[in-house]
Length: 562
Ligand SMILES: Nc1nc2c(ncn2[C@@H]2O[C@H](COP(=O)(O)OP(=O)(O)OP(=O)(O)O)[C@@H](O)[C@H]2O)c(=O)[nH]1
Ligand SMILES: [Mg+2]
Image: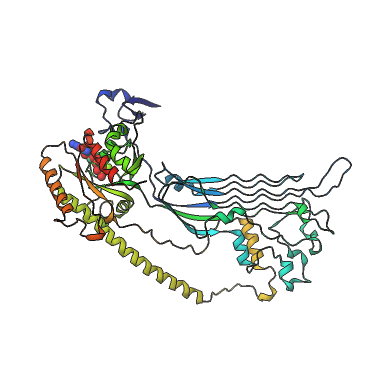
């Protein structure tokens, strides 16, 4: 049983077996900024994932003959198969994580339905749209396009060149092997051997969906950095097969065959979030980042008085209009009006990232994984705990980690390219080597009993296109703009605690000296490599939600225009 108690805009859920029964929650004492454990919500978060998309396969053509009163044995009237569904992608606001997509694994569009008698064409397959967060980078790892594969395996002629056309050597041999059994549909009860070359037509040319022309060229690489008003097609549905009326000739007036629908295209994609949120909160563990996020947004991220309470990024949204029932937003509307008016935003997102410890760049603490998120935020808010040690050292320490991380990234990029070259050389060497195959058939290439491309296509048809290709390429890491040129400011929290006034004064003096050029930039870079705006410090008490409007105002001013 689940008991729910409505307390000051927040719902508290107490499960059976929990220590705190609903009657023990004192409603008058409840404060969302120092929450009781049942108020925590853990938001699942994933910033990179892989996904296989598959367009819909085409429906089969139909073999049917007109049958009416007084027409017992009429002309063929089988309809064509329907086209398969398409796969689209659309970047939308409101999505902040790829976890839903990561869980899916495969995304398939609907299959086209088979054609039917009386010349009824099959119904089109259903389209699917993949909704991703704004700031997603989509890259193709491998693709299986049956039409392209056929064209490649058949020596670039396409499978329309049935063996009867392109293989003069097969003349006079067993004729039944000349048609591609994986491409044809036969009338029920008909034995394949009854189809001799004399009454079996050449396979029609492969047909491509017109929408293929609007698909982005392979290999896919999309940088979806803005919300999209219309979806973009990724894979067009495969064409349906042809019904038996297509194969009527002078000599064969009642063809007992139709073609099957085309196989679907499959593309294996890697999705990666390039932009985590508009603002990233960077700070030492226990500095009060999560409390600040709760004060600014409706986030229900976990808060605790120990280090590493937050283990995965969580994103909150600040809404800048006065919706009723959103206390965080309503209070902020006045303070934000100025900044928002300037850059025309109605809302923005803030990411709470796990705390950075000294030597995080050496993978200490929660390490590099979370430094990675720092470079994905547009604006950096350094959260400094005024009650802790020297706040100036705090700012310098955080910048040191961020700066060192950036150096590592540059090295990694350089090494990565060197490794890439090495791998290419290895592949080139492998191509030269001759593979030893002890059980190879003794038939010489000229006497090939079943051409390889027929055999392969047949096997793939039988077993499906599930197996990934043998050599899967590795993608290079994404390129990001330098962290040091991002706008930044300092949020000095826990300003309610005693003896924090002097600490804040020293912090402000230090930042003023940076602004006037008397102090070096804490990242040890200078000139064009660093952001040259005025760095500000905002004192807040997040726990009592005091001074948070000032934080929103500074954020609003630093964000780039929409
Ligand atoms: N007095 C006071 N305490 C605060 C304030 N903000 C946060 N705290 C307390 O500081 C402790 C840590 O807060 P968190 O928000 O969990 O800190 P964090 O930076 O998210 O910590 P990690 O997730 O571990 O990195 C909690 O006990 C909060 O109640 C504040 O403004 N004033
Ligand atoms: Mg936290």
